Every structure is written in C-alpha cells, then in structure tokens.
Image 1 (tube, one colour):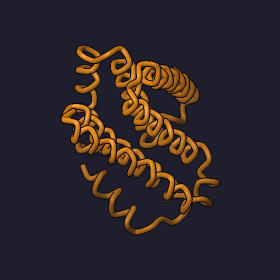
Image 2 (cartoon, helix red, strand yellow):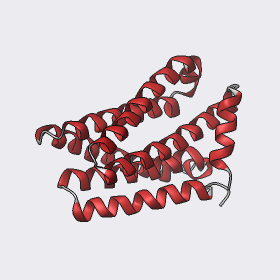
Image 3 (cartoon, helix red, strand yellow):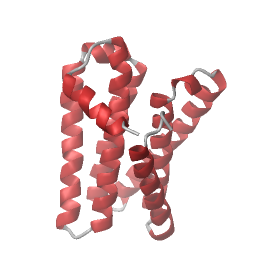
Image 4 (tube, helix red, strand yellow):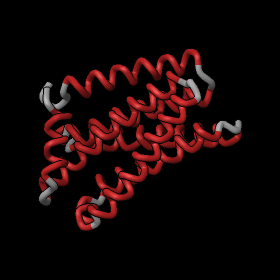
Length: 188
C-alpha cells in the first residue's frame, strides 16, 4: 500500500461511512453533496498519487468525466442549500468549491502554480481557516456529526494538498515544513 498510506485509508473509510449515513438519513442535498464530494476526493487521490494510472489515456478521460459529473452534483447541492436557506451549509459548500478550484489550478497548471506559490498558499490558508471556523460553528451549535464530518474533510483535503505539493516539489523546491508534513501524512 505504498501509494495509499494507512492514515489516508482510515480517513477515506470514515468519510465513506459518513457519505452512507448522509445518504440514508440526511436531506437530499446532504446525500448528493456527501456522495459527490467523496467521489471527487477519491478521484483527486488517484490523480495526484497514482501517476502511472493517469498515464493511460482512457483512464484519464474517464476520471475527468466522472469528476466533471461529481462537480455538477456538488454545484446542484450547493444551490439546493441556498434555495432551502441552509446558509452555513451553503457557505461551507462554496468554500470547498474554492478549495477544489485552487487544487485544479495547482494540478493543471503546475508551472504557473509554482510561480505563484506564495499567493496560492495565502489563498489556501484563508480557505482552510474559514472551513475550520465552520467546524467550530457546528460544534457551538451542537451539530456534532456535521462538525466531525467537516473535520474529516479538512484532514482529507490537506492530505490531497500535500500530494499536490509533493508532485510540484519534483518540478521545483519546496519549504522544509511542507516536506515534513508530507512525510507524516504519507507514512504507511
């Protein structure tokens, strides 16, 4: 399992369980949202950690198509939250869409991302800090499962972000702190 450390596997399994719970007991928006995000997360992991798989033309196309469909489902759920007046969920969804847009830029345009590393780090820090604040709001509201789920998502996407950083490190040098964090997260 060298391409998929035990830590990440545990987080992914917990998120899969959460998606099943939301699909079975949540609102329609929660079910669509959690399942689509889980699909997107798994595909981001494949794309950033398993380069050999992505070299196959048909596989890469299929992954991008499925990611596009998941993104449409995520957008539909976000608009559903807005329509239903679920403001915290809507803000959370919009922040996550921002995180994905940032990751897409880093994955699709690695040279430009490396040139703008400081700015991208500032944007990523603002997005992740805002998402952490939402976790605290859910705790304050007594929405324990939502807070737990949101915290797991933060951990999962930080792990994906570290994969992206590791990939871009091959093309340019990176800060020692990022390398230390990547080693901790990727330790089998």
